[in-house]
Amino acid sequence: MVAPLALSGVVSTPAAGGSTAAAPVAPAQTQAAATGSALRQAVPTDAQFLTVEPDGRDDIGFLDRLRHALRTVFQAVQKPDEAEAAAERALQAASEALDRAGGSESLFVQIRVVGIDVAYADDGAGDDAAYASYRRLGVEIGVARGGAVRAEDTAVVGLDGRSFGLTAAQTRTGLNTGQYRQVETGGATLSTEARERLEAAQAGLARVKATQDALKAYRSGDFDPLKKLLSDGDGPSGGRFSAVFPGTGALSIN
Image 1 (cartoon, one colour):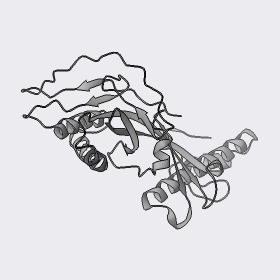
Image 2 (cartoon, helix red, strand yellow):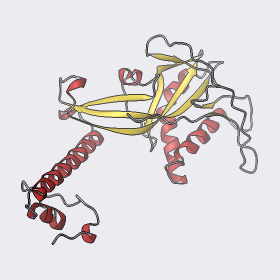
Image 3 (tube, rainbow, N blue to C red):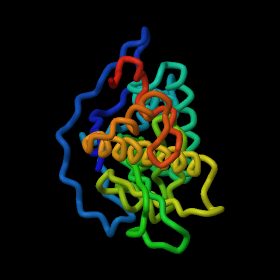
């Protein structure tokens, strides 16, 4: 599994001139056991998270500081303008949870980088029957109210800020651990994006299989399959794989 990346600190308001006055980070407090996996206990000083709290200031609002925190996270993997767009999409993904918590006196938001295991299974098949899977990094935005973050108040988005669209049950799988699992079923229920990811994964597996078959033949003394694969993408079984080895011009077999 992909280990979640801990982002520690408490977000403070950027001061004039672009500098940020960072508040000291208190030692992480031991979290109380959550009731089941539908919620986790939350404290603003937990160093596992990047935390954004209302501070009562009028010069910059809570949502603006949350936007700044998200943009900071996305800038680790995106260009500044792309990070800004990702932050806006992530805010939109968390908007319902923020609206629900709007009147709470103990409102704060916890942000961390998490792992998402995306698996594919046939219609009606259980999770254990998944025939393909891959792992992605994402960003979890947990809106805390009453000292807890609930599954329904948690948004999990990709590194481009787009929501993964996790169900409530899927959100509960990673609320405490930071390791989420999403199962996509086959057939007409697959979204366009999910279908494209599945096709890309299947194409990658086919390229790996073609390479393994060609190398097996090479070790047996048959050089032709590997030469064809490297020169024009012809697989041993007749398939064509145009990008098995990018930049293969530097590799020659005599």
